[in-house]
Picture 1 (tube, rainbow, N blue to C red):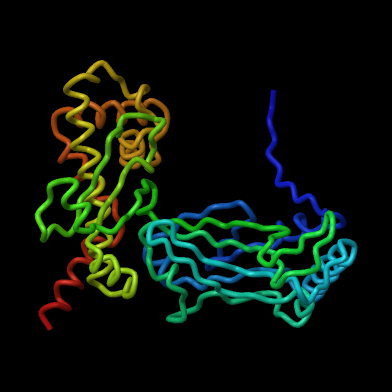
Picture 2 (cartoon, rainbow, N blue to C red):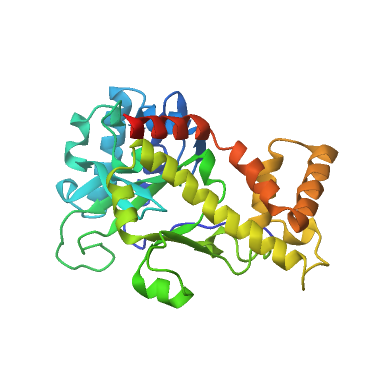
Length: 333
């Protein structure tokens, strides 16, 4: 039996809003992402390519969009000047959210069909922090409270329709959650006072755990500077080092478990786990029997030499060598 998930907004007269919003796309360079879509970029492209919200192909299409939204809002007894389109950019790892663009539906016919969200050096914070990528979210929301009525939204911030576009970098195929490394956390794990980073993972072999089971702690001051200056050479190099710290913890833990009470496991058993995702990343685009052979090869090597997998993983990070060299050269000037 097939299953279908639908977003339901229990308000009268707004059925036409979600389909209209879902037709709006996001463009990065020459790539277009549809609502619900995902694209993966190199670090360089993530930091440099222009990003635009595509309301329509031309002015006529933009006018048609504005008219359809105004008609739907009118049917729902909602004033067009109290409802806004808002684009936010959210970084899952740094937990930052910025409003990149907003416009009242009543003013939408005056907007350009292509809305520039980032161009050149003018980039929101989320598009200056490549590790982890970001989620662009388009919401149609009430910008103020209305008189309360049955089957009509009235509370400020209520959303009527939404679309999401996921932008990822090569560094985000395996995720982790950064948290501040406070004195309390250091005491909990028995860490020295000057420890700057610490990664913890309990179940790297469990498909149920996934990448969310990795927790990376970063010194509070370092994390704040990283968020404030994500584009500096030192910040870029540190972000990659933090990723490798998390992966090193995952691989070391995996090796310990595979050589102890879970030595009976095969690659099929751990597929989808953190280790499984690391191995799939190393295998790359290999297919068929070659892919299977490479998966088994890296799985066996994890047991006896996890550092080898880390070295292979490091080699797959784009621009890591050049970023490190530039950072060191900048320090010597």
